[in-house]
Image (tube, rainbow, N blue to C red; front, top):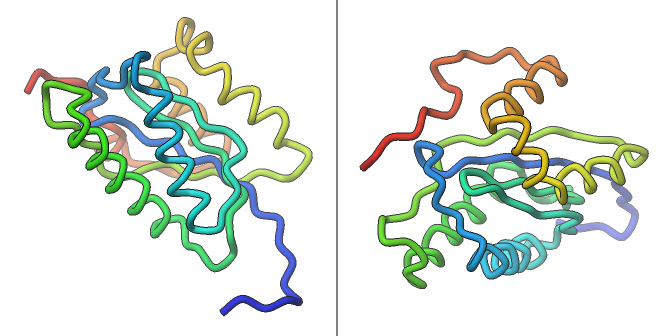
Length: 157
């Protein structure tokens, strides 16, 4: 239930990977994917502040609706976008997102920096792998993690 006397400022970055971190997201259709995911986020009454991807993962910066859980939003984004990619036959293999995701919260003063960081993903990943980036984020936020559950290495399937 939404009230007119509720005020929030919740900024979260979601990071999630293609199954087995396969480099399946292609430049020729990634904009369509970004637009599709943007519509999912906005239709659930969130504000999408930034979206970008590399071939093996995707970043979202969202002004989160307080009536929306992170897990419910990710279930919708990952489920519907996988279906969209497969129905459009953007890949010859069945497209799937890897289980799990990272979610990191930010203050308003950090939003501009995070937007620029997300929009600069392709340049950033010329210097650092996704796994290095992801582990750096976990460490920066002091998140205890089990290496067995960090995104799996790419495989041919």
